[in-house]
Image 1: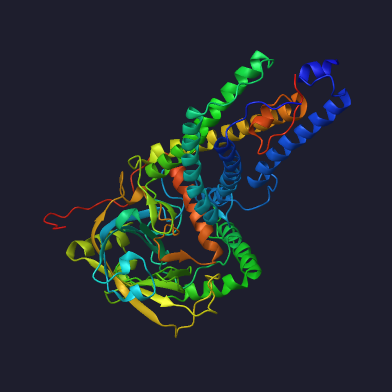
Image 2 (image 1 turned 45 degrees about the horizontal axis):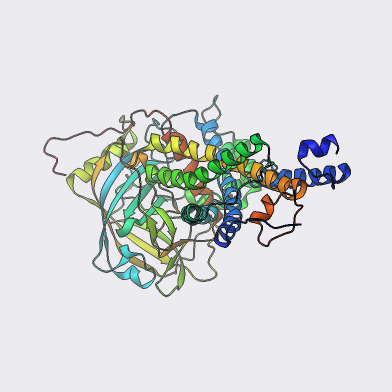
Length: 182
Length: 370
C-alpha cells in the first residue's frame, strides 16, 4: 500500500462542495421546467445556486493554477488519459458557461434577476426576445451535456477507485485511502 | 491474469468474480444517478400536469398564433407612473409605497382568451397588467382581471376547464354537457361562475376595476406579514355599456375608446389593498374575502400614453405575477406558481417565433399632446 500526491485541501473541499451543489442544481433545473406546483420555489433556489457555482468554479480555477493537480498514473492507457483531460476541460467549461448562459438568457428576456430579498443582478445583455429564445435552448442543451459528462466522470472515478485502485480516486477523496501500489 | 482484468485495468489480486461485482455496483450507481435525474424531470410520471401541457392545451383550444401570447393575446401597451400615497408603507417595505414616491410604470390592457384578432365583446374578461420599475433593478409585475373571483381553485381544475369551455367548431359554443360535468366536479367553480356572471360590466377599460384575485403577502421591514388582495379601482365613474357600443362595428372598440380617453387626459386607477385576516382563504381564489375587511388606498396608477404592441414594448414583457420586489411575497395560492410557470413557457415559445402585427393599431390623432 502507498500514498501519492493528492489534490490540496482547498481543491478537495471545493470539489465535494461543488459536486453536491451541481448535482442539486441539475435536479432542480430539470424539475423546475416541468413542475407546476414547485416552479416558483425551485426558480428561487436555482438562481443564487447558479451564481454560487460560478463563483466557486472561478476560485477553483485559481487554486488549480497555483496548485496543479497530481499527475495521472503512468500506466494509464493513452486514450483514457486523453479522455480524462477532455472531460475535465468540458467540466470546467460547463461549470462556468452554464451560469453565464443563464444570466445572459434572463438578461435578454428582460427579467429582473432576483437573488433573494432586494438583491438583483444587473443584465449582461440587452433585451432581445429572439436571442433569449436561442439562449434558453442552449441553456438546456448545455445542462444535458453537463449531466452526461458528470455521469462519465462518476463512472470513471469509480473505475479508478474500485477496479484500477491506482490512487486517482484517492487523490480527490476527503481522507487518504490506501490503494494497491503498482 | 484474466481478459476481464486486462480490459478493466484491475490488478491480478482482484478475482474476475470480484471485478464483475464491482462493475455491477458502478453501473448501478451511474444508472441510479441517471434515474434520479429522470425522476426529477418528470419522465417517470407521464400523467402529471406540467407547465408545457397547460400551454399546449391553450394552443389546442385556440389554434396556432405564432408570436402572440397564448392567453390574453389581444392587447395594447401603456405607459405612465405610480404615485404613492404613503399609506402602504405601514404594511410593505417595497420602495414604491414610500411617501411621495413616484415609480415609472408600463403595462398592457388586454382581453382574456388566446385569439389575437378576436373582435372586442362586452362580456370578454378584461385585464390590466402592470410593470413597476423600482430603483436598483427591482420590479413588480402584476396581472389583474375585471372579475370578482377566479373561476378555478387549482391548476388541475384550470386545465380541465380549458377543455370543458372549448368552443365546439360546429356551434361556436362550448359543449353544455362538458361544462355541466366540469362544474359538477368542481362545486367551487360553479359558485365562482355565478358571481362572475352577475358582475356589472362597465363601458370600457378606463372605468373598469381590475383585481389581483390571487392572494399575496405584504411584508414590512421588521418581517411582519399581512395577507393581501388588491384592486385597481378607476377614478372615472363606472357606467354601463351603451346600446351604441353594443352595436359597434369597430372590432377594436374597447381598445380604441381607451386610447381616445388617454389622448384627452391620463386615466387613473387607485391601488386599493385589502388586508386579510389570519383565517381568510389565501389558497382559494374562487372565494371572496369578507366584505368588512379593511383596505388601504396606497397610491394611484396614472396612465398617460398608449402604444400599439411592437418590438421592445409590452409585447416583449412577461407579466409574471411572481416578479415581486422585496416587501411583496407569494401566498400559498397554488395558482401563483402555476401562472408563473405557464407564463414563462408561453413567453419562451413566442419569443422564438416570428411576430405578426397586433390587431390593435395606433390611431394617431393630429395634435395629440402625449
